[in-house]
Length: 295
Ligand SMILES: [Zn+2]
Image (cartoon, rainbow, N blue to C red):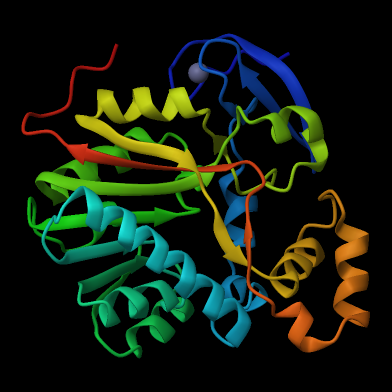
């Protein structure tokens, strides 16, 4: 068994969890997060983020996927609005082809995006109301410190190991009192514990799967106070789930979903349904002081 430290809490108490696609995922006995038991193979992971990463998932050419993404964004904007009102400058990190950005822009936010994929960023830039989309990592984006009211990361933080640098950058970019919204798989969830290697969020590119309390602690250490945390209900449809099952054949129910996609009529496939299988959201407020020294 490996002795790699937990990238979330830095303790070194890995427990065997499961092996997926040759990657030994372990559970941290201290904070209950799941992580790579070996150093992530970033060359292999980079090959997954090809220029068709967003197209394979229907982010730029599928009206049903787009509609579901818009509905999800609107729900979270309402939640964020209730905790503010925090002003109107909004950044989405990992904005993909920009469906969420366009939704926020239409709702009156001044929006900018950050996206690793040049092809996805180019699609996002063409959306009405989108002020700017920076290609690359958040840490390198030309954004002014202390000027942003809300920074959102949907299905992004689990791709970053270790996550502390990204949280520190978000803290620097937000104005005091600004909000960060994170949606990420819950590595401590019952579904993760039961499904293990068949859990729908276990991918080679998901290098850290936080438990709720681990992410809370990580945010607090980075200088945030958690305002809300809960199940991440997403708007989704069977077409999206079947695409997911095609890209990731190991997930539970994958064969059934792929069959649905072949035999069910289009309107049924595109029916918008609330969905949660082991994801959570957290909204945290940037404190007025800096980060606590890491313990
Ligand atoms: Zn840990």
